[in-house]
Image (cartoon, rainbow, N blue to C red; front, side):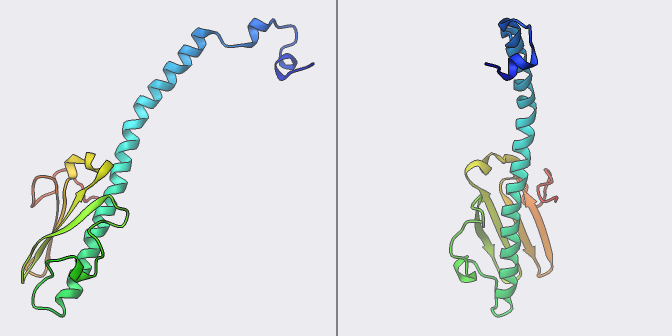
Length: 153
């Protein structure tokens, strides 16, 4: 009976057809090294992609607030008043809240959940609307800034 190995190497002994333990260990070490280099970069890209979920939710909430304000004397302080059925972003990676609502402005916040909670440099994302015309996009510990560039696209 002819196998693909015997056709490829006629006259070879069975010992020459396999991989040695040393070759297998070298291959395993190389694959492990590549995985160790690739996984952190992949996780960073995943966090950045999920961050867009929170940003999109805050921008949608900003639009909803503008619509609400056009017919009311002050901005809404409750998500349900704006027609939101729950406090989660579209993909569920963030919990959305209105932390402050006044006559001239409001503060919206997106707090990361589950796997996105590991994005500590950008937790929470905030959108602050002041004086009817100034938007402040902030993230992390500083409510007035974005030192980690979390809002950069």
